[in-house]
Amino acid sequence: MKSKLWLFYAIITTLFWGIWGAFTGVPAENGFPDTLIYCVWALTMIPPALIILKLNNWKLQYDKKSIIYGAIIGLLGAGGQMILFHAVTIGPTYLIFPIISVSPMVTIMLSFYLLKERTGRLGTLGIVLALVALPLFEYSNGENEADYGYLWFVLAILVLFAWGLQAYFMKLANNTMNVESIFFYMMLSGLFIIPVALYMTDFSQEINYGPDGPWLAAGIQILNSIGALCLVYAFRYGKAMVVSPLTNAGAPLITAIIAMILLGYVPNGFKITGIILAVAAAFLLALDPDDKTKENKR
Image 1: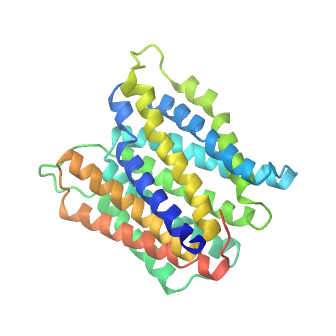
Image 2: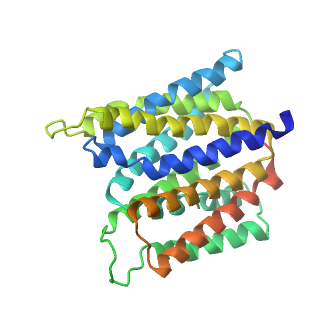
């Protein structure tokens, strides 16, 4: 049974992140600012961080190197989240998440130039597909298309780079840190940025504090946090080269499908092609690098 635990945890992560992605912008649509959604997300990271730390007998690494790595990883992840929450407020969820799914492209390229690692044919093909896919997301034929502007696309690219850079530092940290410490510092960094999010919030506007505001946000964001916790255990019990493709490509695909169903909208052929290429790229990018470098747990 233990040998199948990785699949159980990986499926939960994929489903929870797929559903989370599709609905994460709903509270903002209901009048609850995306900056406050960030605060709610940061708070939902506390339970899983404490749970896995307790399971590890509260063994937290607090040497200088671990703290620096933890802060970098956490701030990149939390900063990406804050940008993401604004992106899904102003842009199409079904396009944003497939774009972000190719963030391993950044990780691989940094590893290539800075760590002198070499990717195989799958990783190279994944990078090519990602580069081809990205311009297609912003292509418009001007016929019966919702006008979201361009800012969402820029924000999605920023999240892509932030999380790709985060994964690069995770690779470095995994050589000296345990996953419980990495996750704890991710949670701590998220909490650290809460004052910034509060400062950025316009409290002069009418804010929805009802059930479909903060409480709905909490219910949606806990899916993200539980998914992240399950991902830790998926990597603990399974191979990274198997777990990564399932979560990196599967979750954005679920998000895109759910979002399009809810909108009752089918994007043009170029954007559908972009989604397909991005998901394929995410699969190839996730599949290729880890089998050559390690089978580390995040």
